[in-house]
Length: 152
Image (cartoon, rainbow, N blue to C red; front, side, top):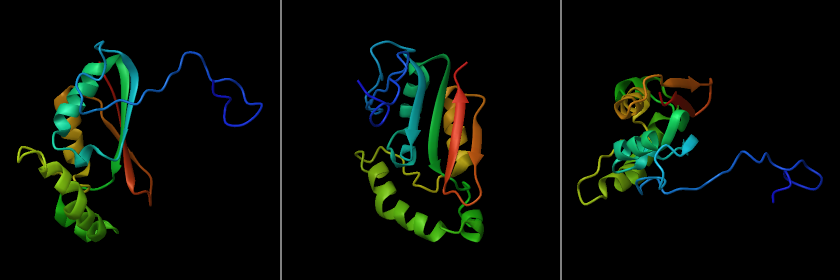
């Protein structure tokens, strides 16, 4: 059992567990609606089939379950990013050399959003899965946006 991080800490709550799952393997659990919370960090834009993954996340959440996704904070419009995002050039380069290679490497059937897919595209993806209350949070100077949504 975990001790809370180092000698003498309180035992972790008994009603919380953490599981690592392969989001490309659907379903995420043998039981539909098995999870209260699912967290994804900085990879949805890399996937060949991000909609399939987000659909699986939605199906795997209990009613009222929360999905938190963290990804690069950007606009879905390239010109807007190039005019105003301080790291646009670097992030588009990384997208071209890494992210898009992964997304397109699915026998020619993948999509290739890349890191600069933007909050508008990401929000549409979440809404298409069934989430209707997508909240996007950013902090000044932070590279990431946090998307928080609840399954109805």
